[in-house]
Image (cartoon, rainbow, N blue to C red; front, side, top):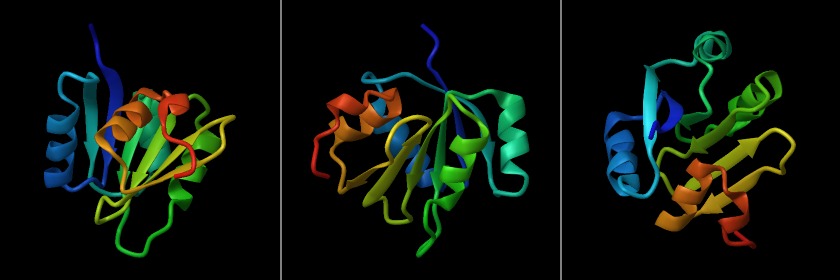
Length: 123
């Protein structure tokens, strides 16, 4: 069964590997591209047609890029991950932004799957 078509954008390799290992056997991710910069990200992602984008945020950076991507590319889910991985914001067209602080493995898997109803409320 094919995995969720995923683009990793500016996600540090160590963090990407940790996410892959933690989610292995729980959710299947097919990494279709690794993008090291945010230059022309919208155009590059549009050509790839992913279902999910995992974006690594720099220290102090907000998730404005995720908001812009979801607005420009309906149907895409974007997880913006803070530099220390203690905060993940989930963006999806037509859904309210969800912020996960110190997310559990179950929250991470649910966010990757797009199963927002399984993410604990009040986070």
